[in-house]
Length: 231
Ligand SMILES: C[S@@+](CC[C@H](N)C(=O)[O-])C[C@H]1O[C@@H](n2cnc3c(N)ncnc32)[C@H](O)[C@@H]1O
Image 1 (cartoon, rainbow, N blue to C red):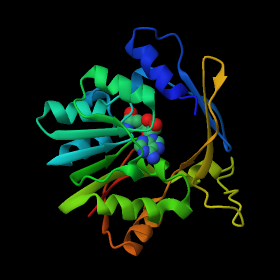
Image 2 (image 1 turned 30 degrees about the horizontal axis):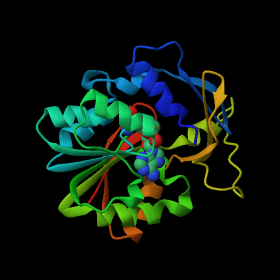
Image 3 (image 1 turned 90 degrees about the vertical axis):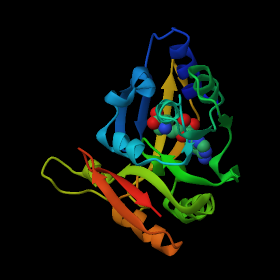
């Protein structure tokens, strides 16, 4: 991994903001991911994220923390937060911004336990593909204190397969429709392709039940997205 995501965060943090990240997927064209969005404060966050932060309690793990926006908010509210990311640049920036406990680590290597585990900005993306969801959920469950909770957001992206007449062109013989190949570029450099999973609520709930987690929808977002609470 070239860590272009981390490089972009470092540039923005250092005042060298000249261009945005460019993302695309196997089913969608290029789109800009504005760097300021990755440094959003509470009032600029989607309602789903605001709700997740309001529900957070106790000792918190922020998985895939990016620049640390969610961690910083909770830390300022007096909660104890540990922030993890596999992007070296992201962890460098999170620390510079003031996240006290930020670690370069894959969530699968985490062993401490927490009262709240946050996975935000399509939290299921980290699971990469449908076949890996139960592995990640089992692991996340093992990191929960008694009465702990996992707060995770995602979207049902069926709408992306709709044609102009409202018909769906999902290939039912192919893999799950939320499994995407995700491409990212920054300043004319391409990152290695990644797998990124969008998971509809019913599929998440089904996977949760198979590993002994209960899954409730906390709220729907504006565009087929939702926040779920797993206990
Ligand atoms: C879409 S970004 C979200 C960043 C941040 N949560 C936000 O809302 O701005 C997803 C983040 O997850 C990180 N990530 C991906 N897989 C991970 C893993 N297995 N363990 C920890 N972090 C991971 C990526 O490096 C990236 O920073």
